Image 1 (cartoon, rainbow, N blue to C red):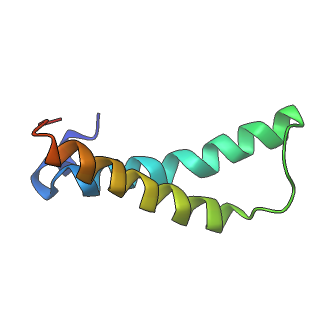
Image 2 (cartoon, rainbow, N blue to C red):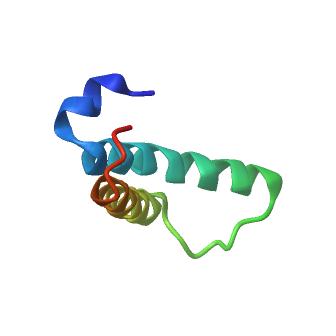
Image 3 (cartoon, rainbow, N blue to C red):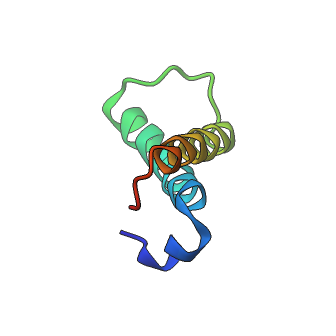
Length: 66
C-alpha cells in the first residue's frame, strides 16, 4: 500500500497513512453516532500523522522493511 512512498522511509509512509486514516475514522464514527464532539478533523489528522510517523520510526528501528 502506497509503495511510491517507500523511497522516503517508513516514518513518512506510516505518517501519511495516519494522516489520511484518522479523519476518515472520525467521519465514520460521527456517522455511527459514537463521537466525542470535541475533536476537530484537523487535530485528528495532525495526531494521526505524528502517531503514524512514530510507529514507522519504531518499526524501522526494529529493522523491518515495509
